[in-house]
Amino acid sequence: MNFQTAMKTCFAKFADFSGRASRSEFWWFVLGEVVVLIVASLIHQIVYLIAALGFLVPALAVGARRLHDIGKSGWFQLLMLIPLVNLVLIYFYVQPSQPESNAHGAPPIA
Image (cartoon, rainbow, N blue to C red; front, top):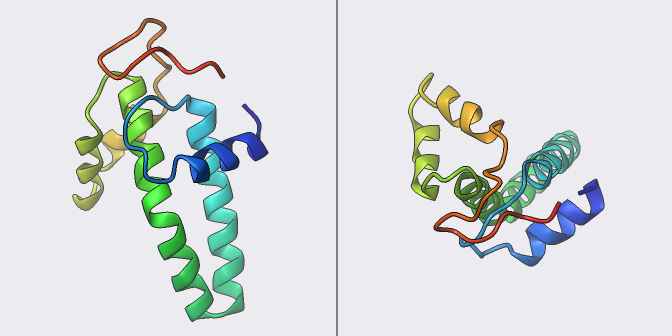
């Protein structure tokens, strides 16, 4: 999956917390989010706030789908709230996809 496809997919499924997201889809989306937020912060705080709020739900949704891809619950994203323990979440995000179907569906194509 390339950058454009990942961004389109994540915004098309912005409130879809079910299913699975490939590792490339997740990380391309994170890269796009970081770039947009850096540019927005250079413009103005209000622009940054609007951009951050615009990315909030899609980021949570793709994070939940990524965790589903490795067989974990999307609720593991709550680990982001605990300092240092949130490193476990990064470990989960970099894990390879489960090649077989799991409780959350078939593996993503890309």
